Length: 150
Image (cartoon, rainbow, N blue to C red; front, top):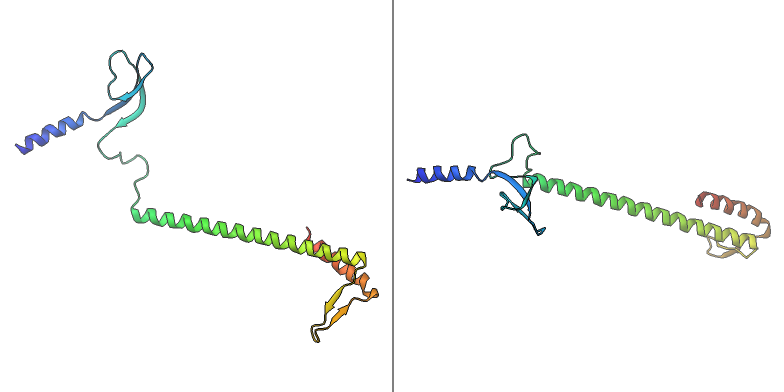
């Protein structure tokens, strides 16, 4: 008895395999069904309904959960590395800009003849730049500007 019912169910399920159609009624109403009602225009959608597994030569087989998780972690690591690299690049650009601004300001102060003070590392005393040292210091500052402001 159970075998007979199983055989009937198997035969009925074979009929479930079929084409899905787009049915457009006279009033413009769109329905999707395996059979269109009378008076409706029928268009093929290319979608096949099936209860069985996909054919072996179809798209790539499903990956296991562990493989999907490993790929996700790899993508996240790559994304984090790219973000870190971009942040480092932005920080370096900001540092170069700051160094350029400082070098230009120092050169401008030298060219204006402002008093330049340095601290002696041994004694901690302030030492003012001599007038004779300005020309060499301007040359050094100009090289610094050329180096930092590209």
